[in-house]
Length: 410
Image (tube, rainbow, N blue to C red; front, side, top):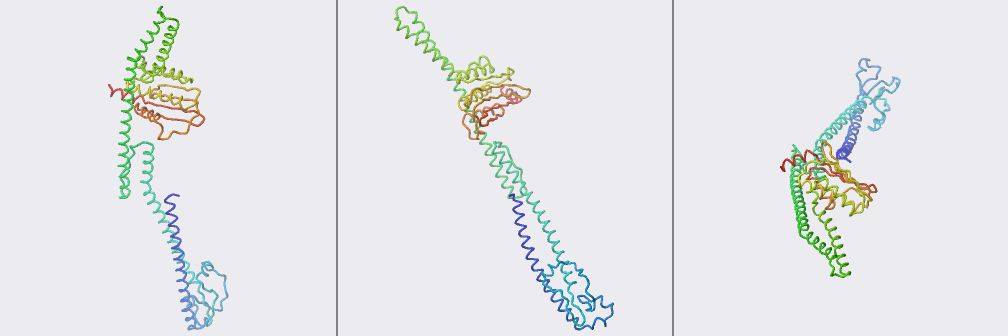
């Protein structure tokens, strides 16, 4: 129930109680007035002569009295019978000195006053409810704005602010909300900056480790494999020793194969050599080999100009999305689509897995990193999923933002 309805019901109950009490007091007072009036009229009838001795012109000015010789006419009173019962007045005419006592005129005047007071009371009540509606509506307007602003903050839009209010109490509440929103916005920017720096540091460390492994350990493995292969042609070795050398060379080849996958996962050297489009194709092929799942790639070669940092963010975004499919989706195949329009770069990763309920705000670190990388690209990411219908991850990056970011980088 809304606040206005609650207040209106309380006020209506108060108005009804006041009206019932006032009506009861009014009826009691009316009863006393009628009794006093009838007492006075009865005393007047005792002092008057019989109606036949009084001129007709004088009879028209006498109230609450009429000659007993007149025949009863149809009742033409303008008040209801329940009101007569309420004032407890017997309308049976009493005859005194040839006169009938008739309180109808007095009761009619009381009834007319009762209607006038009731109408005024109802009009005042309607005006009070109208004023209440206007006041409650104006009073709730800041609260409605506060509710919308709090909803925006809950959705992560920390820039929501409220205007100053003319009511002091509401203005204090608004100022405190704005202060809280500013603090949350500052903390959000701080956390976002730290997370971005953490991702950049992680990417740099991966690149450094990949280069060290490629230049040092990779060379050692290549040398060991070459030496083992050369032993196969040594005539002084027995067949058993040559078989051991052959096994050693095969093991080195297996290690090198996994080693190349590790280097690709740490830092995609193909992206530096052949560009982002080739790196995405290589990522899809490598993921298909390692996961054993089918990956359908729809690639638009008209990729915009990315900075090195933006390329890394996009590549890691796709890598994390595909890894989530192989780890959690229980799917048979995935689709990776990269398309460019006049205004944005659209990327979608879809699977035919089990799906899940909508992601919570406190999702895992992988999803958080994807959201942060999307933010670094200036784009918006959506996670769409239903139980039994698979999952879709959509990333939309405005080209205008990429152009402005590229300009700042230059």
